[in-house]
Image 1 (cartoon, rainbow, N blue to C red):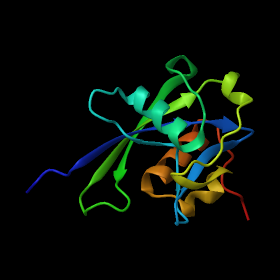
Image 2 (tube, rainbow, N blue to C red):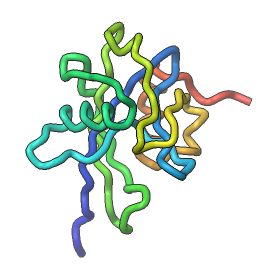
Image 3 (tube, rainbow, N blue to C red):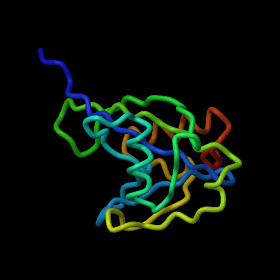
Length: 145
């Protein structure tokens, strides 16, 4: 039996008024946190900073974020058995990012402020992240009908 392939990624958690910033993948209706793969010679925080800038135009420094958690879930859109290990970095508040306006780059179709109600539009690692944020009291929970 072979070990699962692990895809190491980093992502930025930018929260405002009970919502978290996510990006919509080009030509798809799937929401991801701004982030991506850790490149060779790069730390997890450097990857989160670089990817957030590439996808949203936000200028973030290591001093602006704290490591929040690592989420490990089946990788969306990858070979069966592939697992994503996503290191989450929480933007400090208040900070310079509070006034910044994220914009969709050429890599993504849109930026959206979402709550746990949007979990059905997220891959497994996104769903797990939303759950962690709700449990920590940082994100608005699912609507109660």
